[in-house]
Length: 258
Image 1 (cartoon, one colour):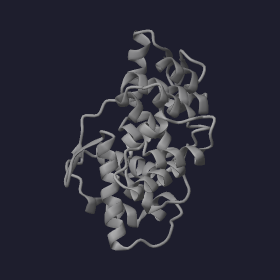
Image 2 (cartoon, one colour; image 1 turned 30 degrees about the vertical axis):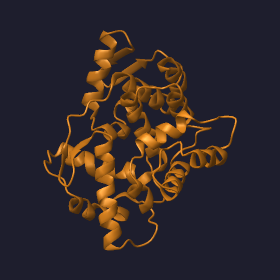
Image 3 (cartoon, helix red, strand yellow; image 1 turned 90 degrees about the horizontal axis):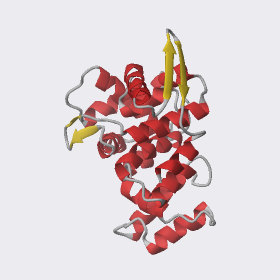
Image 4 (cartoon, rainbow, N blue to C red; image 1 turned 135 degrees about the vertical axis):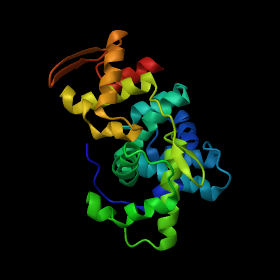
């Protein structure tokens, strides 16, 4: 799934909002609209905001990033069920990048190549060249010309977001962390990708795995391990591959994680 569309600086600057999103979704009422739920979250300060201004910022970001009544419903259901946050965080990143195209493009087309090239130290200034060439490199539509200050804030925000999700470590100077995708998180993502693309080989090669610093070889190794422990069925013969999953959909698998 190639994410192409409008890029905006405020979402990147707002950051990951992991705790705030979890808390708002944990109190979500599916009988109410998204607008009503977010209004209630602001009024009751479900997200634990330190000010009304920040509560409004969080509400705006969640409204732009997620569709709780639609494709993001399993993510909300898991938060409501008290899903362990370390398993939930990768799912949040996957769902978040469906609509936050700048974050997706940054992780897949800048951070992952840096990881593969063995980059050791990453600074906000390193990201600015990527931002300047963003339209040329990825075909994304921009939201206007960004000032030098905005570019610096976006660069810092993107690196901070990757750090919040455990891909990086450090503060002013970042380095790649020893990241491992939890088993149940991997299985959820596998269900989600197979639901979108029934061809197992294309799923293994999907660029979505780059969000988690994984190459096709890493995915295949995990599939073989899960097959060995009988959590899935994985058969491969040359370029042909077949995957049989324990649940009919990502939503059904999410309910098993409750």
